[in-house]
Image (cartoon, rainbow, N blue to C red):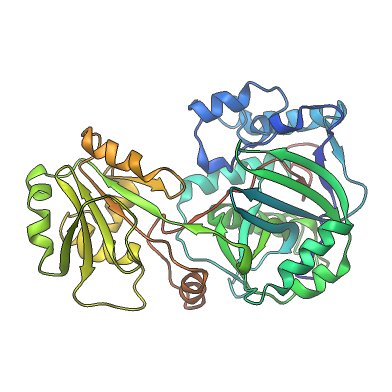
Amino acid sequence: MKNIKKIQSGYRYNEAAVLIQECFGPPYDIFNYGDSIDRSLRKYLYNIVHIQKPAGPDKEKYKNAFNIFKDFVRKEILIKEEIPGFYIINQSWENNSRTGLIAAVKLDPDYQRIKRHEKTKPGPIVDRFELTKSTGLNIGSIFVVFDDSGSQIAGILKESAARGRKLYNFNYPENIRSKVTLSENDEIQKILENKKLYIADGHHRYRTMLDYRALMHKQEGNPADSRPYDYTMMFLVPSSEVTILPYHRLIKNTDTEVIKKLIDNLTEDFTVNRKDNLRRPQKGTLGLYLKWGYYELTPRRKSVDLLDSELLQKEILDKRLGISDKDMAEGDFIHFNPGNEDISEIKDSVDNSKYQAAFILNPPSFKDIKRISDENKTMPPKSTYFYPKIPTGIVLNKVADPAWIS
């Protein structure tokens, strides 16, 4: 049974029937029902949001998603791709670019070949599980990275894209250009077959597909031959192409006296240097912005294996501010600010008293992620921001018929 396969039963937008740039959306966990992103996406009748985050009461919304999918297919808004292939995507922004591919990847329940670095929570899994049961579709791609330190595989992907069939060329979001090509190059499967894959974004979607696979195996008596639901759709990116940004931490709902005394209390564990301007510090040093100044915190006892997010959680959030791992998950103490946003907005948020303090971090490297994943350890929540996100809606992958349809 192959570990990597072409997308066999892909449905994609018919460029002749839609405004293609209006069809895509971000991953489901980037926005919420009713927020500004959600409202903007829903303005276009054929946007993927109507399937990805369907409207309707309770579990009815999940059936609605499949009915919308069927309607899009009937109207040829979505068309089935007759030729199995790999969807190679090149994204470019400012002076940067990234090339990866969407493929079907065999699920690995034991996390030996597919590695994780985050814990999952039940809420998102229940939602995505109900959607998968009701549609039988992979709607969004799980973002994974594989080791390509010599850039050899990245080169093969770019060559395959140049020879493949051009599908889309669009801007989404506004400042990111995406070019999508369908490739039938069998060499891609061969070179990726035995690669370890490290989940970047999509831990909950991966856990969902493991649960869905288990359900289908139970219903179908553990078939000996592989089924489409034994695989899931992934966006695979060479490590040589990946851009990892940090998530900064903005603090709220904390005792004001503790905040006032924070600098003095930190001197026991950190060398504290006041700086003139807010900026991202060097790796291994934390930035702290308070209304009265910006400080850089260098630990007195350095650990080469400790990530910035781990150092912050262990030595400051938990020890000095009383914000535990559980509080991080369940409380309302921290806002995570993605590293692609202007750092000056963080300063304004503290100056305007929206937040009490801000910690400026550096991201882990792929080497860090690989080490932690291979050791079967996890990072604190929101330790990585892989940029840019992969648009949802480039291709939908059918893995089974919905269970509720007779």
